[in-house]
Length: 462
Image 1 (cartoon, rainbow, N blue to C red):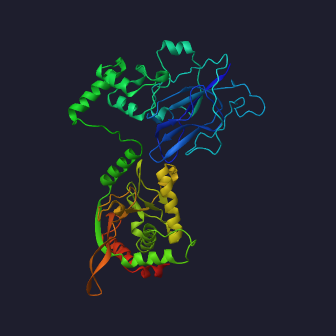
Image 2: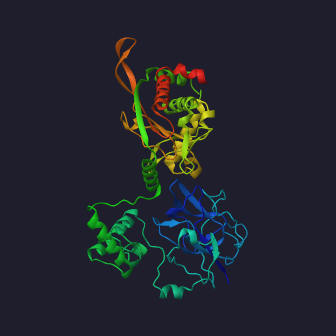
Image 3: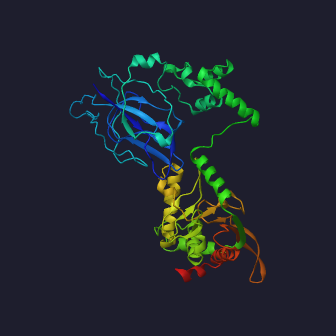
């Protein structure tokens, strides 16, 4: 008889306590190898592929795509010791060993290459081919990530009325069902192989279909509708939810203040053009304006270390940090994220620029690791890319300050006693008034502006 093992959502690190199922990488009946990724989840930090530490046959999956699970909740069950080895030269998985890899605290997956998926229906395999969704205990009371569970028979699963993974492809159909609190398991699809189509959901909505389990949800929805205006409801979860929580906490805990100044960036842009024109073709990647501003920030923080700090509220102490881990705001399809350039104080402008480019690309593709999104000590926010001049940034808690940069545009400016058209940028600094007073914040901002107006000032600190 095969042994059925339950694999739970592991601790993904960085203090993360939950994740949303984005995409299942295996189906019920597939053969999986040890450390093969089985599901892609989205945390508040990044997209993560979770590998299973056991090899065998997938007998059940827990949770549909779009469902949020806490750490420790069941992900799937695997029947081990039930797969017959394939003939020599095949690419399928050999008989699975119940010992597993132990790589359940994965963070962002393992490097083991996935194997070809194949389905088996071996005789004597009594594990269910469906995915019962069971209530999940609180995070404090969940069991270890892997546990042995008794195998349920197909007959018992059928008697409980539990059905397998819902045959839905379109995210729009799932969203429509969620908005109307419809259980897709209760619908019969009219598409090929029972696929649930939008017309099926709309028909169920018109007929007022509901199940006894949905009645409390309908009542709660009615209460919410009575308290709030009618409109589209967008769940605050994943990246959007994490950003909302952090910004709200920042405004609750940090007594912030903002100062700003206009600066003539004409010389900075000329210096950048000279850097990128030196050496001719093949001289290396272009230097970005953001990289130059980042290098200016590290020099300014060396002069004003009060702004590279955090506040320990319990100890009532200001903690001045030894190194600068520079975060920068990046807008992606998944929302606003803040990748962090580690040890920016020890990097050159070129090195900072290369790291910004790498992290930006990873942010856009959703492959940033949780460790690349945490631990920042100061944030640079270039909202000029949105075509705006000014802003009052909200501090990225638990940091002490954020520098905002507007667009660089030609404006009338008094230069050397005469009116001229110069390239002007607005700089704004939001700071935690607990760590310093206005004089320090003003000195920091003035130094940044001086470096923008006269890049040669920066040479003194290089």
